Image (cartoon, rainbow, N blue to C red; front, side):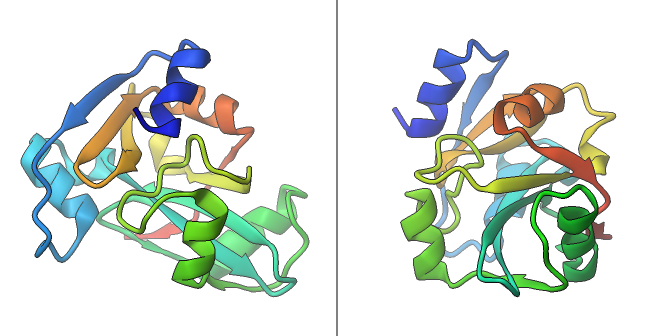
Length: 162
């Protein structure tokens, strides 16, 4: 049981767990999940932790087949008055593991050690459900994007580049 699953149970979220055998040679954890679970990559979302130019950490949740646009992420954080910043960059992996309690490739937006400001890419909104890491490699949790946003007090914004 991971902290992410515990949160989903406590909050009585409408979720399903999906497990697959993780290949340690996989280049992209997210694309591996899409392939092994036979789900469109646009429905599988990765959890990235960024550091702002003020030293604060934030979480970006976006489809695995896209890349994070740093300018859009900084703008989303500032315009939604979540964090004041002009720039963001990827956070140091050790800092990510310390603040979330998860290993890279298994970082879940749910059940992190420290609650971080979170932005979910707006492409999640039309989906009935999306998949995010359930807290370890090879384990995904499927849930409605609105429930995820409410649980994390997250906002939706255009933060990805196709």
